[in-house]
Picture (spheres, rainbow, N blue to C red):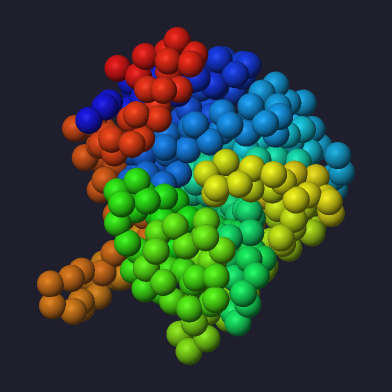
Length: 356
């Protein structure tokens, strides 16, 4: 176990070592450690070596000049100047929040960025201002659309955060695939198989091989196959890709550049600039009084919690499992798999930073 503060300090120092400013290093570390605290280990510090590899390959600018390149009163396009998505994402979300202050809603498309961590982190920023937050991003092509043998889309997550009065914030944060690629990485480190339904092999057949994507296979959309609604997961992923890539001027579809853990580094870019995201902020009182809305959100949450459940189960609200894990890890520390600890120690040795 390692405390969140220790992990945050170590991560900040690594980002400092590749040239990030103190403020950007703190922000990037906070995004990563927040994922570990919430139990989203696939998107936490386990990815830190990947960000450093992106820097080594010249794909991350540690001191970007992030700027608005086009805007209207309620919209903007942001160029991330190849910065860490962990930094570009919150910058752009804050633009959406400021737009919403004056226009009621704010919508921001981002191009020329990189992997931005967990989508939920960015969506939650809006809830601090009595706003509903939305965040989405596309990613490297690891996913085969329904009936396809080719990888055309990323895991393309969507997050929506909605504040309540006394109840915890509603946070739906999910990939448009059966599972995020990071879950395969965790099982790769453990040397375990994946469940049937997560991926297909190079011939389009169901597989339990955690390394299937490295061997020519693909992740499957949410729903897994046509009979179970994979066309809906495909549709969700396509919408995220179009909003994040086509609308922003970033790359899209099979041209989205890869993260550093998918087994390949070369970026097959050519239709846009870097990786893209899409953010939204909606001022609640642009629709109805915020206190009134949040009181009804309490009622909504409480009624769903009271829903009669199947034996041995209870109905959860999106965000509940992560909140429970966060409370435990804040008190007892964050568990890291041995391969993750080893990779972080190797990174520390390179930059003269100790993890403990």
